[in-house]
Image (cartoon, rainbow, N blue to C red; front, side, top):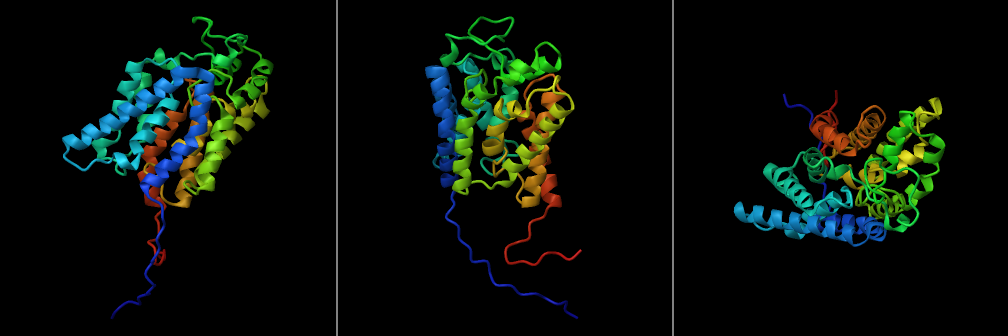
Length: 336
């Protein structure tokens, strides 16, 4: 006896959303951060971005030639990887390190897995983790923005020249260890919002990242679920710790505006290849990323946890997708 079959109309849905358009929108969204990097760190910032982009493009082209496949440069994914990687690097990172990191991002973190759509980990974050392990000193040297060179902040790196400066997250660690009073650090929130603080190229100006993120949401290139989940979990933890002990933890806004939280929420965690497919999965993924970022920032010795949080949740994405199955278009949900 045949079981009852439910017949549904075919899902004749067409959406004018190509890979090239998505990547183009991401590049436009990153443009304010690129401009801010050029404003605060001058020509050096633009050179680092150019080196990363050119190396990523050449690396992907060589991989397609070696594998005798059609060139995939037209989808702009290599350009996006190069820009995001560059924006996650310190301004004074050696060009040789930027080249090595860019090659790693494309060849090891992307093409070895089969290219765009097959990679498990976010290529830019995988490359940054590799660079942190390989070029530790260069990856933790922060330059004072050019707009502040004539008026250096009170807190500077103790073992570096006057042209280097601690980041807001490094200040946060100093507060936790009782080395600095939190009142001064909390006074830096405005500078962190505008971008006049030390840090990676694309992490210093919260305003630029918010503008870019708003553009992606307006264009519906990304959905709001992952950014909201990342900011909700990280902000909630930052607020809770601050309320429990304001003398040991900095203002939550400093966690929000300082470091890579915003660029992660809008541009990195939302990578459609390495993030879950379902809305429920996106919430789990985003909440996990935000919680891990704060866990590393507060408990760990390293002041920033974005790359590790993203890579850990990337590894869990297949498991999340398995437990948050997507009903096929036109299909009927399973009855459990």
